[in-house]
Image (cartoon, rainbow over all chains, first blue to last red; front, side, top):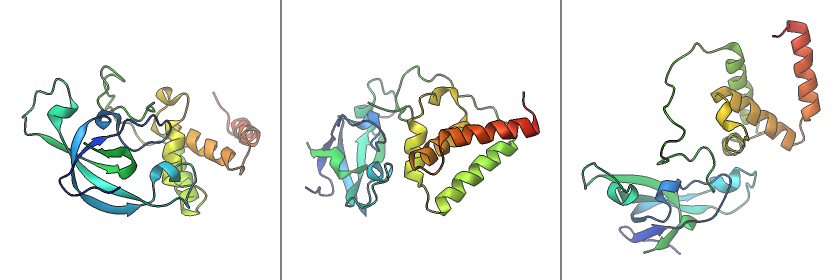
Length: 92
Length: 101
C-alpha cells in the first residue's frame, strides 16, 4: 500500500497502547497526503528495542483545523501538517 | 489507549501549565549527563527513553528530570545492567554519607 501526493486519507484509530507516534487528535480524521518523506525505522518498534524490524514509509499529511477540532474558531482555511507512518493511514 | 504524553486536544487536563523557571540543580545536570552518556555508549536509545518516561505510573507527580531519572533506572533494570536493590542500596549509602532530609 502506498499513497500518492494529494490523495485523501483517513488516520486509522489503531487500538495500540504504549509508545505510539500518531497523536490522538488526528486519529479517525480525514486528511490529505502532501508527500512521502521517505522510509524510516519505526519508532514504535525502536522504543521497545526492536532495531531489526523493517523500515516504514513516513508521509507528511495535511489536515484542516476545522476537521480536527469540533469548536474551532479560527480561519476556516487554517491547516495543520503532521508526519504520520503508513500503517496509521487508510484511503478515504 | 493514549499515554500521558499524548495530551494534544485534551480538554481540562492537565490544567494550566506551570511556566515558572528555576535554577538548574546539580542532580538535574547529572541526570542529563548520565542519560546522554548511556545513549552515547549505545546502552539505550532516545525512543526507549521516551517510551520509559511515558510508561511511568507516577508520571503526573514527577518533574521533568525526575522522569528522566526514573526512566533511566527503569531501562537499566529492564536491561539487566543494575537491579532495583543495587540502585536503592547505593542511594541509601549516598544518603548516609552526605546526609539527607
